[in-house]
Length: 254
Image (cartoon, rainbow, N blue to C red; front, side):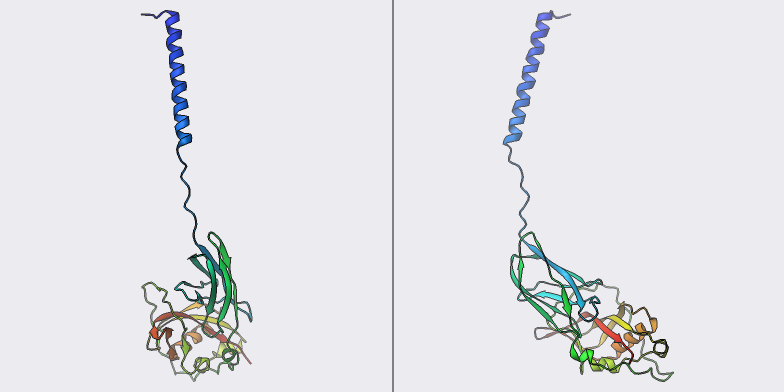
């Protein structure tokens, strides 16, 4: 049955008015609904790099810590470190590394939502710099014990206040270092960064080359020297702790 034209127009007009009113209602509801705000950032970040002041070589495994707190980080293979979720405030920040003088930076300001960049240029200790070059290799037939296997479990960072050090000082490590004959003849020099797990008894429990000198014979000689050396373990307060450490071994001819 076909509706009269007048009724059709009236029905259509009512539908338009109804749709308009519904549209206005939902638009008003959305406008009145409070918008969700993003949570405010309440902490900041300290980051940067650690390198040698002598040759700008990056120092992997350096510990950077916020004094008076438990917050700390260890520099990676590129010498970079990151300390996150730092409450706003003013701090002193200390960097330590085996064989190098510690550095403390004071009046370091951290603001919420901001990053504070701190780069450390560390100086080798006078004892380490004054060491004589390594002696020639031992006579053939004298072999050092094999290097222990690197464990498969994760190398979890263990906090410490004082890093490892050779018993008798860094000259003790140098005394165990033999310059390979082929490297000496080829006038090869360089720095090997050895990563070693030092137990609370001062012995090397696992070892691996973290950063090569680019000369395999120097790498092997550095590993053997670190293994032969008796170490003073890292300390956390008055307690000895087992830690992974990056140990620099330098090869330089006369």
